[in-house]
Length: 206
Length: 383
Image 1: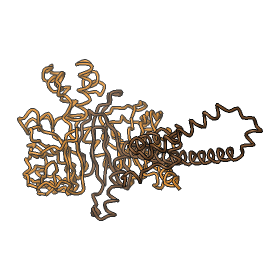
Image 2: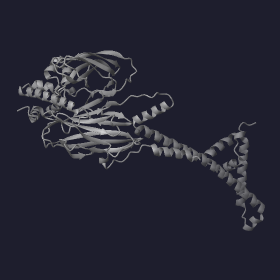
Image 3: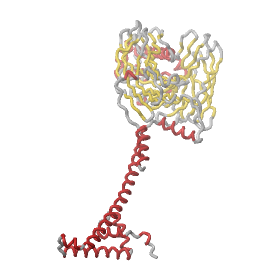
Image 4: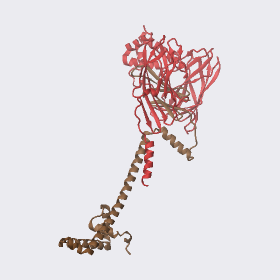
């Protein structure tokens, strides 16, 4: 038994292939099969010879309307054959279209997800991310609830205090001198370029 | 059916995708500048500058760069001012302030104050009718060293220390100018030296330890000013990497006066041998004459370089930054005290650096001796 039997194209596919009416990808797959399968190749050749014969007959005969109607059986056979081929062709195209739609939807969803992830990491503050990650970790038991209290910290551009999900940052130039001014306050001192006055910003936690 | 997951994804995207909001046109909704009726300063000009309100994910961000023009409407020159900055979302746990020390604003004169700040708050947080950020006067210090204001941030003490340091440094520089000691003046103000800008560090104040590194006890080295009313005796702290935990210092009141509070200054030496003045911690425990007391700080201090890299702590030094007596008067180390305390010129410079010296150095570097003389004359120290 031929191992390719299960993958034989249907008669309709072979018919469309013989006429050159298949979509590109399906045509390539069918052509490959036909080259390797003698039975299908015979079927295709048979379709092609029938088609050529019909074409020759059509060209050799000048049928009047009356004569055509007189050959009623031949006309009926041709019409039914054409309908079958048309129906099969539309089913093939529908199947190919469904694959294309599915592929494009998956691509759209992947693109939107990438946009969402990119937007999240570039626009959502790090504090929010940490809070969400901590909440998720606590929810699954990977992290124990901890209490750090209010934290005051300095960065090159400002001093920040966070509490109750909010953060207040007092900005200063990078040249500012940072020091602590109490057990829960941090200070930045600099000379303001515009006024020439010393400015000290202080942030207090509790 | 295939559209259902896509609709769900779309709905989530619409709900959560960060959308930059437009700048708020009515800035007054976010900020209120309010001075009491009897305040010696009033706001006569107000500019929001490039202030923006935007939405970032589940948070709202107010980025404010306001410039105020204040006028001295009192009868005395103002030497220092503290504006309290409060955000309703952080009250009472956190607040900020903008301090203007070393001022000499005569009655009727105007001066600028900038408020550069950012507030990030959850969009879902409840909001009251009042403005999101409120700016008001906390304390104003006059030239006679009397103060005005509610002083909720203990600003009077800080302004007084800054003013005493300013007077000390003005007198010292004026003496150098008057006596023609220009090389000493140049050396003092570091004219032309690359590392003029004071050394910078990053600081974090924590309630508890974060580092998992093992702790080790580090003895504190006291830097004593011979004539200080409070003398540091000994001390220690637990150090783990770049964290200093529970620093404690024993002090003795060598004066005959009752001390109301002591601010101990801290100097941190890193593993490269560089000293950094980390600031001062104030103890408000009264100390009677000739009594010994222990000053402790239960929190954790974490040090880093400005780039964020942890700073390995090699040595801790402490000194008396200022002492407040029970009668409200203050002691700060004189120039002679600082000179007598250490032979190390770098450490001496760190101890002597004050906001006023920083300001005068900027004038000297920009306008030279003539500019410095003019500025000192303005504050009536050079004739």
